[in-house]
Every structure is written in C-alpha cells, then in structure tokens.
Image (cartoon, rainbow, N blue to C red):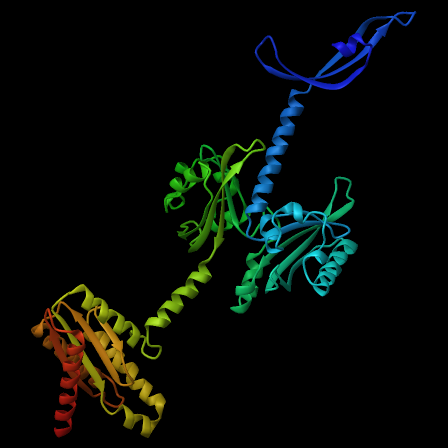
Length: 471
C-alpha cells in the first residue's frame, strides 16, 4: 500500500488470501497511480487476476518432474544429458558415482575429457557429433570404458537427440548399462534385447509406482509384458485388488516400510504369472517417492529380471555336487553329507559300497566310451534299487556308495538284495555286455565313527569281489 501512496506502479505481485467463502486464493496484482490535471495523486487503478489454477498446475508439474527425477536416480543404468558442446547438464546418481564425483554438482558443466582418458573422450565426442549432425538416435552401442579408479568395464549405450518445444536440437540423452558380466558370460545379445533406452515408458526395468494408499499410479510397458496386464486394467487399483501373485513375498510389508522412509534394496523374489506363463526371478528395489516438498507420497518399485543369473547359479550348484558322467552325487557332496549325518547323530546308519567289476578290462578292450557306458548303466541300476531320498554317489572311478539313514542291519541287507535283483533284471533286459558288481555293506549304531563304517563296508566289498573270482 505504501508504494501506491508513493505513486508507484505495481505489476505482477502475488498475494495469497482466504476468500469469504473460506477458499484459499492466489491473486496476481497490477496497479497504476491515478493523477489529476495538475499531476496530483488522487487515487489508483487496481486490477487483480485469480491465478489459483495456474499455481496448482505449477505444483503438479513440479511433482511430475520430481517423479521423473526420482525414477532416473533410482535406475541402475547410467542416465545423463549433454548439451551441444558436450557439457553435462544432468547426471543421475549411478553416473556421477562411477565418474568418482561426490555429487551431481561436481559433474554439471564438465565434459568427458575431465573424467576419462582423452582417446575415450574423443570417441564419445565423435558419437555425440554423429547423433547431433544426423538428428538420429544411436542405439545399443557396445563400448569399453574405465571408472574413476582406472578399472575397465563394458557399456551398452544409447544416445538420443533432444529438442526443445520449437523443434530445435538442444543436446543428447545418454542411457548406458554396465554389461561387463554379461559380456564375459557371452550374453550380450540377451542384454541388448532386455535393454531399452526410454526412461519411463520403455525403461529396461519393470516400474510400478504406488500412492500412499498403495494404489497403482504408474505401470510401465515392461510390466505389461511380464504380467500380461495392460496399464488400463491395473491403474488406480489397490494392492489388495491385484491377483494373489502380486501380494506374495511380504509385498505389503515392504511397501509400508518404504512409505515410512526406508529404501529397501535389493530384494530377490520368485515370480510366476498365470496370465503369461512367465516364471523366474526378480531383483526389486523399493524407494520412497517424495514430492517437491520432500513429503513421501508413495513408493517407486523397480524390477530387474535376474532369472538367467539364478539359472546359472543353480547350474553351478548342481555341477559342484554331481558327477557329470552319471548325474549321481559326486564324492564332495557324499563326504559333506556323511559329515552332516555324523554331526546329527542320526543312527542307525548303513552304507552300501558298489564296485563295477571289469571296468578296466572294458576300457582296455573296447575303449573308454564303452567303459563310460558301463558307468551310466550302473547309475541306472542303482537309481532303480533305492529310494529317492537315499544319497547315491559316485565316489571313485568304478566305485559307488549309497547312504541309508535310519536303516539297520536287516534293512541294509534287504537293500543289497534290491541291488542284486535290479542288476539281474537289467542284464536280462539289456542286450549289451552284462554288468557285474561287487558289493559291501555295513551298519553303524551310535558311537561308531563313520570313517570306521566306510572301512568295514569297503573290506566287505573286496571280500565279495574275491569270492566272485573264486566262483
């Protein structure tokens, strides 16, 4: 008001007040002094424009930008933007950390030449210029680079031209993924298929955003593919309204922890979607979604499919415990199981030792392929003679062992008879050279060391072999 009394014009001031109806209103004020013929101030012309809707739209725009930024900073991929001169104008956390910076501010305004060797920086700049000059994106470029400590790693990079509202080129968006492990494993092509360069709609992670009521407000294209459920079907639905497979693994508890401000990562979980028939493993992260005021307004959940990694781990576990030739347990697993049984004190415990007679002679006469076939046939006979829970292992070149927890002397001798019966049936039904076994069995009761049990069973096996040779 003092400015009006002083005869000053007012333009664009914003005031916030409560109307008589109780509504909160934002007004933009414009005024000009009103003077008489002698230029004396005698009043003012005052105009007010209600900009409440515009202010609300600005807040909503800020929230949308904040959601986008939260998504960018929580992606495991490197996401950054360069201007036409190659200067960084945006860098997500994954990117500035790999450059060795302490914050995004230490990266903004600098170029690749400040962080990587000149030859690499020059190569990046050449790719940037190609995208800028052609106006066409560069997808899935495989390139080797180094981190801040000089360690080499591989990236799968896409560069996309950015334009302003008038269509003028302003820079490039770069999305890059560390594919070092995939490259070593020969999986670059699968990584390329999974990798997608668009930040939200087509990012290579499944993304679901929940509001504070755990209703879905975002559901990206990869989620549609995985689940077979279009975004329109799940949009606005609460967690409790989704199919049961979406509520497994303590999902509601994890989401509520994120709503309380906790970042939860990584969480590995199995999935099976009846609608698509897809199954496998996800690695998920749960991140609080905050608005422009820092208030938690929901949860951002990201999914990465790690099925292939899990399958590789399972295959390695299998190979570490199984004999490749016969697919029975190997000696390492057998010894571990023997030690576990000894610690557990589970008695009685019986061991059956089976030796394949004549294996060396078969190898000498017919070759190792024929000898290998004898071993495979032996595994077939032993599987047919024992229970599924019994440990059957190949513990030497021609020697097999079977652990029978809970089997006393009588049950162990019955098991040996099962082996002999299975062997006779196999030889009668098989037109190949007859298999011959030497078998030893021993039973331990509480207090007997299992090393002694093995020795006794071995002695009895050799005695059976001696008697067989005598006829």
